[in-house]
Amino acid sequence: MVPEDWKVEPLSKLLEKIIDYRGQSVPKAKSGIPLITARNVRAGFIDFSAKEYVSEEAFDAWMSRGIPSKGDILFTTEAPLGNACRFPETGRYAVGQRTVSLRPNEKLLNAEYLLYFLLSERGQRLIDLRSSGSTAKGIKSSELKKVKITLPSELPEQKKIAQILSTWDQAITATERLLENSQQRKKGLMQQLLTGKKRLPGFEGEWGKVKLASVAEMSSGGTPKSSVNEYYNGDIPWVSIADMTSKGKWIDCTEKNLSKLGIDNSSARLYPAKTVLYAMYASIGECSIARVPVSSSQAILGIRPGKDLHYEFLYFYLSSLKEEIKLQGQQGTQSNLNAGMVKGFKIPLPSLQEQIGISEVLNSADEEIEALEKSIFALKQEKKALMQQLLTGKRRVQVDMEAA
Image (cartoon, rainbow, N blue to C red; front, side, top):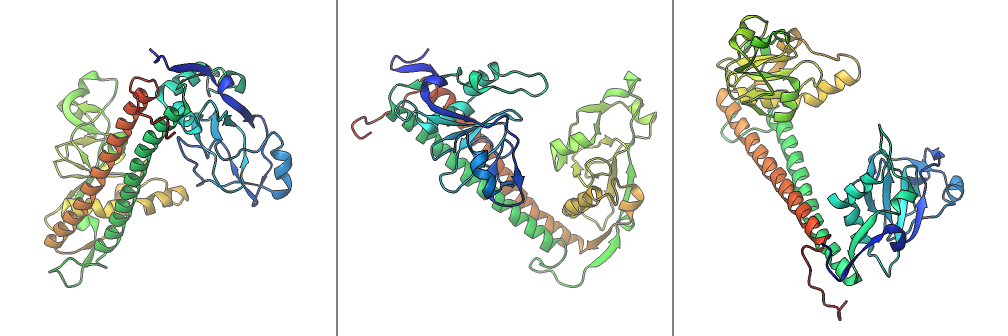
């Protein structure tokens, strides 16, 4: 139900102009005026990590359909469909394919309100209903104009709603910055603590450096025949690469389980708790720790540290090598690892007590990161619920009409 003092109008009646660049082929240049395409437009912001340009000479001809201005909303019409953000307030930009610029009629529609409506669940659903295409959905400007917006009749109420949602965005952005700082801080700690460049109080003396095979036992897993149902659906977790990437550091349950019969009739084996699991294929360098006894596929190496090696220290050290290992695979020098290569890894080996101390410091950093990630998730969920209420009129805001 829409409140009596609200209205439902198609975009065609609320916009002053739509500038459509969807069908044009961008004359890109190595430098010049920054280009904004659908790949740059995200949900609420512009991502310039992938930079492209239009030359000064080509700009006027390219932008002959119209130049967006402050207050316009950029909207992606396909690949991906439905992202929206504000056009930059300052600077000169070209706009590329699969993107349209929406210019609200300032007397009828607040630009910020439009942005939040387009990104809301209801807005996305209405956009999807008017889109077409089987493999990659898209929407034509003629159909986009028909999308009906639910909005307060008075601009001050639209503006107030947008301001409230903007406050939530600011809180999310601030927490994301804190998360990024914590992640960078942990990365710095790993680089210093795991190499001995920085020592914990009370520890001194030179570290040794040994081959991993000399301080740990290791073996790869296996996959029972999938055609034999009795080999599966038991009570033994069977770790795959997908389990490692989705679960993270600790694994205590998996998508598939094996039976004892499956273990006995395959090269799969049972690893004890505190085994470090290391990916040798696909997502090479991914690392996890078994919290309970598990088995694994042949793509994963189970590493059981000996008495001189702490399992969490090993986990953090192997995790610190992840980017280096992945880079080697991308460059084609080694797309996969094997047990022999991992056995030959040379690792620094401080005393067991110092290994445990280092692990505790890095665990604390992980706990801080996890807490911030949970805060961001909670803020996003709360904002999502608030959008649903505010943008439909189920929850009203107080507006001082005289001040407005």
